[in-house]
Amino acid sequence: MPKASYLKSWYAASAHPHPAHPALEGELRCDVCVVGGGYTGLTTALELAERGFDVVLLEAHGCGWGASGRNGGQIITGYNKPMATIERWVGAEDARRLWDFGEEAKAQLAERVGRHAIACDLTWGFAYAALKPRHMDDVTAMEREMRDRYGYGRVRRLDREGIREQVGTDAYVGGLLDEGSGHLHPLNYALGLARAAAAAGVRIFENSAVTAIDSGAEPWARTDKGLVRARHMVLAGNAYLGGVAPPLAGTVMPVATYLIATEALGAERAAALIPTNIAVSDMNFSLNYFRRSADHRLLFGGGVSYSGMDAPGLRHAMRNKMLAVFPALHDAKVEYFWGGQVAITMNRMPHLGRLSPTVLFAHGYSGHGVALAGMAGRVMAEAIRGTAERFDVFTRIPNIPFPGGRRFRTPALVLAMLWFRLRDLL
Figure (spheres, one colour):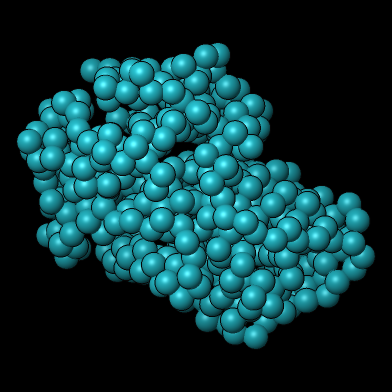
């Protein structure tokens, strides 16, 4: 776990008041036991409870404590791989279904925010920002694929002047504007889902870390002080699932990512940084991303660690990256610095599947979880209700474990990422 504390995050400081849920004590029975109180688990629980299932959700800390409450808040179209690559893996027909699922994921998120009155600063607009001319070749390819092959008309290529109208910096040579992507306050979104799930009848238990599970015909989950027996179980721990399910341990890699938040800049100064209030990500492999907050701060993220250890001076390094984009912020204080773990897969695609006929799992969204985790929750709920066709499309994505096992996969990945970082400099 990174030393950059959850308690130092701007998200936690600006979170809406929310009720605490009790820790599990004793033995319970239910239809479905959900392990994990992030977007995946909360969405699965909500979808099932709204259809009459008795659901118990177990969360090791508090709802939204993991990646769902610490991420960059970006709602991004598609997946972490081009659709052409996905077509090679699963064929054109399933690739089209996966594209449609991604679009449904964004619509689903917006519908939930509206229906449950979740105050999470949902805002639409996102841009990929090109740092060098070769990135513009990628921009052209992305626009053609989304617009021409998949009929997605909400993207527009930007030249240097066009990106300058979106972002108040001379750091970029162009980019791709996506009006169908966006951003939100991730922790308040998670807390809003928890409130909706509880109102639908989900029994939520916080500070109830699962220490062991059984994936047999009548699955159960054990905590230090309790036991839940169910007809079905959903594992939704993502990067924080730990060793509870050994068969899944090698299929995802916990990766630490970090954010800083400036002091409140005032409305005028913040608007000058990003006049259209979009979210922005550059196009390096080891990328940086940023957006404005509702209280007129700049939230700036990046600084990924694949080693499991915080780099020395990381807060200062993050500030220097921000100043490389926005030199005018040289006098702005950094008030918050925090980190957390996201889960990546070997192929950077979501990993959904079954441990047994009674136990389903979803994890490894690889940077696209704000939208896709909700879709994973929906298709898992459908599968538990007896309709698994859409869930099975995700299971056909080829996922392989990281090479080297748990002992050697981290140094191997660190070496691989060093190559990509060196490439970013070219």
